[in-house]
Image 1 (tube, rainbow, N blue to C red):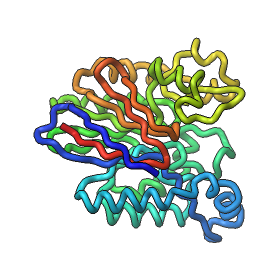
Image 2 (cartoon, rainbow, N blue to C red; image 1 turned 180 degrees about the horizontal axis):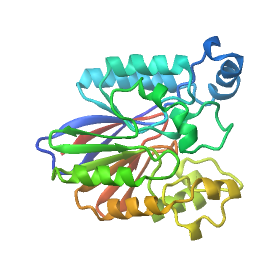
Image 3 (cartoon, helix red, strand yellow; image 1 turned 90 degrees about the vertical axis):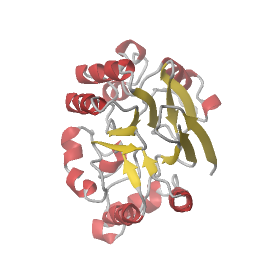
Length: 285
């Protein structure tokens, strides 16, 4: 676990600091959710995310020490369970956390079903109750900078989310988008497809980029399920075109890939990914 430092120059009224973490993947479960969920936690998932509690505690302690908020870009939990949501509720009650949902926030059993809006809505109300802000779309202003959190966990944006951002833009403040899945950019696509080891990604036989908005022609080499999973719809393309051309959008904070990365959505607009094991301290100016 490392602490990383960045500076974002976006036009804040006065400089301030935030902590960015992502993809914590808490794996708590007990018999209230049944033997299958306990087995999922203990035998399948906790080994992959053994560092989850340590990272969350370290970020929490740093937030309290510095007196700054935590910005979390999704997958705080690995799957829906009473124990996971109780841990989240305790965390959000005690610490100042602004949150954008990831796909795992709504996973009942990881990988057991096709995940779409109907699937998400089975657990949305239960999960939302553990958080302070609307985890699908909400905003928060800090020292004249508007942080806008959107749920793109299923590689899609909705027209309602685009309209939400447009309404936020009417405030005339610089905006920082917070999304779970990174938005397609050529450099990041190349890294995830062809330079995986260089960027700390596991080598795989059939890679895919796991980005929101990757065009059809660049997904032709994906496995059929991944091609369909990451297929943008027209609302998603409209959203991304707006995000790329809205001058008030100054940066994007994201996660999902479990690596650290710094690129650009468009020239001059940083897109920053924070890995599952690390904590990023960002000075906003």
